[in-house]
Length: 212
Image (cartoon, rainbow, N blue to C red):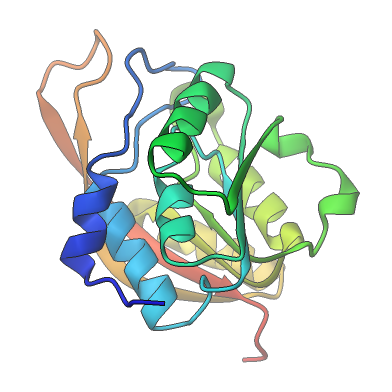
């Protein structure tokens, strides 16, 4: 399959429709095309963890990471999300991109059944950061992702929580590598947001089961 350049991938992901009315309780902040492209390009080109692999996208929202994975040749990419509206936008996006190697499952990611254990080669996610009402939710997502993945989990976490995340990775006996420090440009999405956008420092992390 033809290798996409980073700029080409980003350009395609800019065409993915996002939330019109994001839900605060679900921390629905879309993954920006630039960040999504950087994540997927690295996962694909540095680690070969997308092409022909079975990929899960937890808390997939409108599907930018799933659509990017499918575009890069995933054998199958399955998006998981609790929100019906998000999955409707996701399905429309998949249709517009004419992707057949993509599927969605509506469910609560926090209570995925045990039969999903080790059924995916790779899990990719931009989990809720666990702010306001969802304290600790990022770690709940990570624990589920590690149960589902056979090879690696790729995730975004606030840089300010790095020590805590590392402690959990050690506890769960997984290898944690910070692949990049990114600036997450968070646009004003809710009425209480006073600024047009806020930059949050975010770690792009790979968790794997390799011996270390």
